[in-house]
Image 1 (tube, one colour):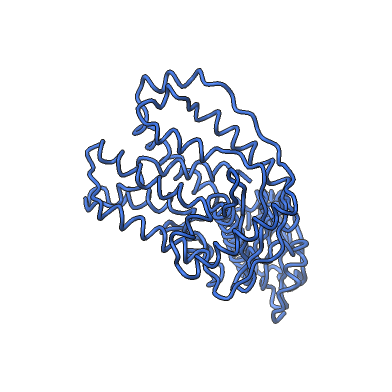
Image 2 (cartoon, helix red, strand yellow; image 1 turned 135 degrees about the vertical axis):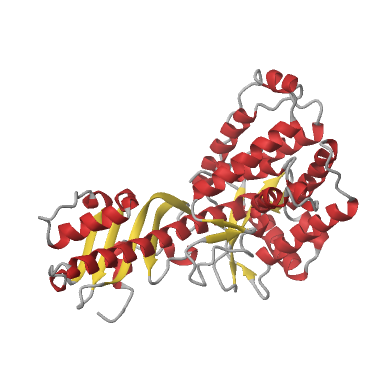
Length: 417
């Protein structure tokens, strides 16, 4: 997983977010998109990928997302705008000489650390449920997000786009409301904490690499020390962190609680971004499964119209994506013909790692499952796991880690065969 998206999206906030506060109709679409992308880290759970309603596309902060690339491209674009607004040509040239950043290795917390981290998680959850701003901010790094809004307002003003105090406060209030909705679990409780050593080391490696890419030093950002401090906080490595499951909600959720100085705070940046990426990838996988299902149905219908035997294809069949690299010809029959026509109408089928389709007694598909390339980080095993999608049922964040394969996934869909 490209955890650097967490950092990119945060950096994209600076210099661009508050442009959406204005009422210029010529910039409404662009600035609305910018604001939507940059608020994804605090609105993901509230504006989820719609996997619970059957949509194969994810919606995050108002943007329809079908894969990680979409998010990355949008974030990269806004990050470039932020960089242009925050730097001068002189500052950019002086930044090139900055020294490299080294990755920090995870430090195993103690029992007292665990107790302090859980106390912070419980206080944060209670604050989210009660919309207690002071406590919510105290026990999280939400202050970074709010500070970003204030810095963005200043940068907008310097670029001729004045943001009033009323507009700024409205944006801050909206961000907080979205954050409350994302984390609130009325009656919820905090489960046992997990120390995710692999995640921490991987995250820190990404943070170090992004710190080097940013090339931020005192000289380079002398004109904007506030932004320099913000960059420093965003790229700060994690030494100690626990992940706590939140029990009692309608869907699985966790709180990532990290040590900041002597305090323990819920990390709203990494936790929401990881869930956002997971939902985005699963949304893409479910969409791919639906497309394969429909394309195979089209292929079999076409075969039937040419008086080819499709009833004989009844059963559950598992393939590699590369198995669909079949050139269509009039000589092909049966399964080879189905593969050729499927690839003809849906070329990306060959990019999938694995596909299982169940063909019913009428010679039509009634269930499809796919495994995508790439992985999703799963806290229960502190490791990356495969990404599965299915149709007509859908795979969700809560059950992706229990899927053992595409055939098992298809077998679990008990339909009329």
